[in-house]
Length: 122
Image 1 (cartoon, rainbow, N blue to C red):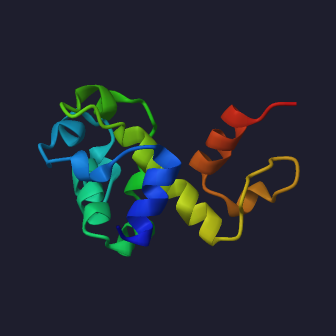
Image 2 (image 1 turned 180 degrees about the vertical axis):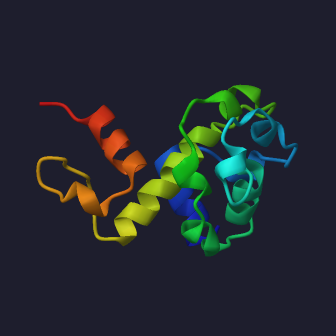
């Protein structure tokens, strides 16, 4: 298994190879007009061990509304995979954990701030 696939699997808990490219996730996504590639195509890039997925905006546009995950006939949590891709990219920038009290939020994408705020506890 490739390093990208291993990292996505470790973070998301999902087996990207269980996706058979039916496109149901993309068909249900409300934000595909804003994405450079569709969600099922993003998963295909991960399956093909193509690290260019980390430079594409699709994972950042994902709102984690879970429509894709609900529609998946294989029970794949597509939103968790998108979150994993965002986390991998953030970690590449040197952020291991986003602590909103200590980081310059101007340097992070909005979805990273939202995800960190949802996980933040006092």
